[in-house]
Image (cartoon, rainbow, N blue to C red; front, side, top):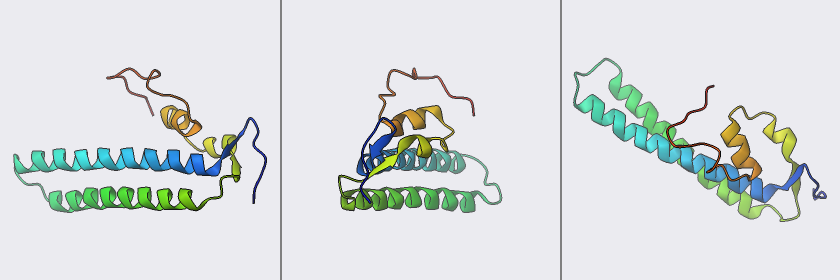
Length: 119
């Protein structure tokens, strides 16, 4: 259902694209973690459950990559005039950097490399 855009509204297609980008970044990070953990396990004495944990991490990576594709295909099918109340959506997001990214803010200047956000 189309709705008018306002200060708290954003085109749903744009929000879905931002969510897809965040999922893609999370999937890439998961891939990196999987490689790193795999290298650590290869160089150390095996612990019960290591291979299961690596399989779970691989499943997480595959899931994130698949969700990225689903979101991208969904965004491509959303009519350009459909908007959503962004403030209502972002009120559920706990990570400030993610909320800024989903809101369309440039987060490159907000967090200096090496800094982290406390949960």
